[in-house]
Length: 182
Image (cartoon, rainbow, N blue to C red; front, side):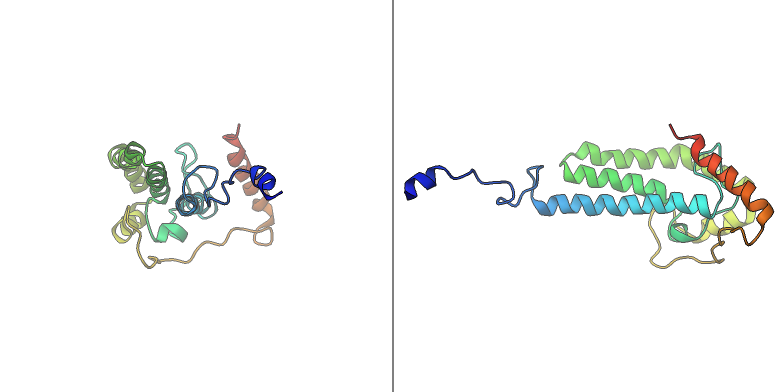
């Protein structure tokens, strides 16, 4: 009887091997998840701060109306670029592919060579004094350990603040959000 049961055993599952569907060790998949989660939070926080505090987007056709220096921007000047480069490094490490990780270097070269020039000139024209102060205080790629704070965050407007303009502003903001959606 025991011989018959032994021959009917199921093959070992991936759970018994403690390997997820990818075939890689669980610690490596957890590292990928944590690394990409950190990168995602940095990038999403940056986009949210541009929309809420700056009343605009990172898209040049809809620039911010205010220089954003609070939130993630009080630690680093380029959180969205850092998020993209960090994602490439994490994916390259996870897939053991140096060329994917090298995409982070290519992204950095692109930002330093083209985006930086346009970005700095635009901000210098729109916010001459505050941009110079912010640029000198907050690093571009390596975050500060403590936030650089020169002003308090701007509270989003509510209907109680200005009933006449709030509706018009929220409609314009909604139009901006959906203008680029598919």
